[in-house]
Image (cartoon, rainbow, N blue to C red; front, top):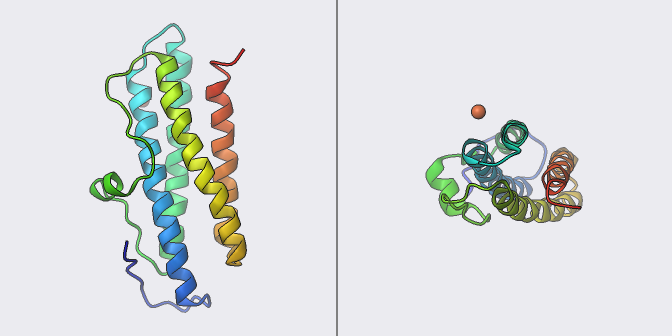
Length: 162
Ligand SMILES: [Fe+2]
């Protein structure tokens, strides 16, 4: 994806900022996709543990939307352009498509944790990459994101573990 860049006095070389903008825009698409999936589950789950899970999924969605805003504003803060439209996300996301015909809590946990794992793996890679690029601002963003994803992986998996 071509990164539309803007003139800035930011002292980081443009080549580096373009690389970071591309990385962050990928994370933006994936995190927005996961946000939509969390809401999809929040609205449609059925089962004995409904209310607890309904609320937990809304906390997940709320946390993701905060992360989304931080990611998008890091793109623009580096002189880039944030790509957040539904049409763009649909073609850019690296997550697995979320089924529309699942309802059982365990099925939602299965699909959400699969995608949290995919985003988590990419986030860990981006922690290393931003460290190599000496961009500690973006590195810190990814460290915060991985702590959040690891926490919700635990919250969700605890429902199906014994
Ligand atoms: Fe709601």
